[in-house]
Image 1 (cartoon, each protein chain N blue to C red):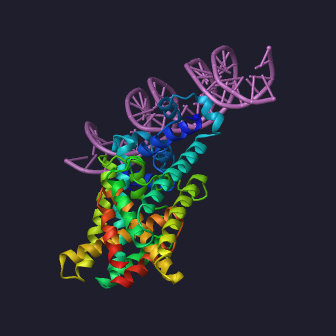
Image 2 (cartoon, rainbow over the protein chains, first blue to last red):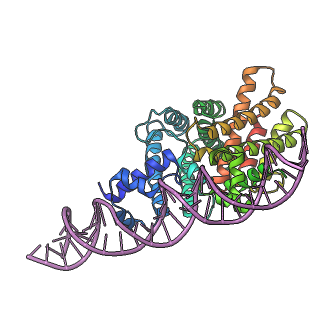
Length: 186
Length: 186
DNA sequence: TCAAAAGTAGACAGGTCGGTCTACCTATAG
DNA sequence: CTATAGGTAGACCGACCTGTCTACTTTTGA
């Protein structure tokens, strides 16, 4: 495997499980078995490595997310499947993405709170991308643009809420609770 | 003011605006004008100071939150007022609590991801406390215990979702969007 | 074939980290 | 009056931080 990719994957895993500021560059190097010079050949600074890790997670998470929604019929079933996917994630039943330690994008945004920072912006872009995927499925259900926006907001709010509850409170059933609400309303 | 309280307040402000691991003990001391010996007289380690900062935020946030809900009639109005309060918070219209940088408890949980850590547990306790306050108001609306639980979950999920969207995506209108949904359902 | 590119190990620099310690200075309660 | 608790400033410790650098080796593509 490409050294750059190897670095980013190792970095992501460590950042995700232990926190970004809590993980030093030397640990990433030791864990990946790659020389320091090589890291600084590919990335001008740790921040750039962090940003790369965020974008890597965006790609892999999004791929997993899409594959789950594509596994069922578009529209209502896909929107409900979304919460089944979250439930599997919370309970570590997904091999594609790492064991649940909250949402990496929320966590990274917590550590890089400045909304102008490249890292925070990359996190916001991820969330916007996922919202667009949801929006596509909602659009299949409603003729009115306004109504579709409203339902998208509902689903996204419940999804984010479920992730937060699952991580902070350890309420791993939050996804199914959210699903129940959506099921009743859709 | 008591030196211990002064330390905790300064620490909280710095931790909240810049992140916990990103703020060293020496900065807290410089900012508060307190000697290092005094800090270690009151707290055995930085972690204990962090935990104290979390508990301090719990007290002040909870006080603000209660005062908002108590400002209107109990039940439905209080539940809607909750989202007005969030909206004011997001838009920095609240002097009681600091400028919005996301939820400190979510942020701290991101940096201290281990659910067994005292800090993470303190964050979970805060969230549970707020949920109980909400639950009290929901109970006024429904006879059935089951229905009340369901509505509480809805409100809490939307609240957490709104906080996440406001911070990560910078969608400061998330609270009013959530309010709109609750208004329609209640 | 052989130059360029990409890799290796790891010493090193300058700085910050959490935490300890000495030496001294109030304030106050018995 | 004086013992004690709580405070001050800041030197110091060992560890770790990001990032640079030297010196050498491997891979690769024109």
